Image (cartoon, rainbow, N blue to C red):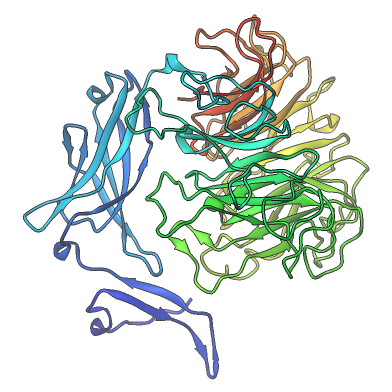
Length: 604
């Protein structure tokens, strides 16, 4: 680390300064340093960027609201409906080529949550030279209105989809849900019966700020027509936390120019709609993610995409052999990481998208057997399952699927010192003696920085004795980048019943939020009186799973109707804040129609 004194005259005026390091004639990359006006010299109104959270329940307790804005003056106040609130804390963060970002913390009293509806929020700079910012909408919602059906048409009143809707993903606080469906009645023109990807905007009972067509088609051609030309269509969408980007798989041939074969590819759709301020000069468009260095489509199927860092990163699996310049074995599934150019603060100048191979050994050689089902945090860590023998040195496979983590380093602001972010990988599905699981471990989910990994397993040496069914487990992997104090312990079984015993039926499809909420499907009866295949949830006691006899909070039935009765379900996902969950279900009661997508609020 180098320390230098910066002369006062160099930071006397607001602007951006370019910083680099030179070793004689060799100059490093450049980093932008922002010089912002002093708070006392700020004039004009602020620009409100983000609220967190954006939803609260009727009758909820007082809580701390995080408000992020630019051009905030000293003495600024936050307007929450008719209340003028003084921040308890105010800090600034600086980003290259952008104004300083102010984070204001205000305590909102419980009296503000007595009635359901929308609440306008803004920030006011004091004095005659100040002003009030743009408004953002905060929602007070009745928990009794959940679950909310999402796979609905734009008719008035809306009509449920007439065919199955399966996979889904929600933005932070559940404002927008992406889902796939083979229904032919959701939007005009999408009548082929092949799967399409949709977005559904939630108004939470407040129609004044809701768009006219709450359901919109995502899998569209450049001319706006529905995806076509494939045999399966578009599916498995994952949405960015703010709702702007949706990644999905599709074998359609009309989504972007140059794709002529019905081979499943990965696409990223920029909707230009965000819970953050709308991007300027943005035109909705779809880009091909699973492309070779020359831009050609992948020459074999790609699937199971996941998204990180507000759309900057996409991880996926593929058996294509032309996605990277290095040679990869034909017919073997590999894990890839695509890095785009859009960040939270705008597009990166001079950036070109790139793809790296993640299922590699310490020497960068591809995995010698299939690697599938990737998971990603913001972009620093990728998890996946694999049969390969060469992912971790001196740890050959044993014919069973294992769970691995790998660092990417791509989400770090600058290269990490030493070996902190080298080509590191670790096996997660290991017992206390370091032996790989002696049964299949599949479908991982990973918390920020790789601190906790959740997955499904049948491995006897990872489970309590005499456990017959597949269980969901959480392992304290302590794989953080940068390092965070952590006590690595063998994890515990999450899919336990009210007596703490592993479920007497298979559990699968785990989902994990950044705040330790877990959702999964189980065929076991984990709550007294609840039978059949259901979606359950529980919360880890802290961001990192802790040792002890009761490392989890009580189990919650996620797939419940508004009266709390089980309605069955599968394919759950969690919003990034871990308060809302989506799942697929035929619906409450004795409904026997096609599966629909529902938004629940189990941790709200």
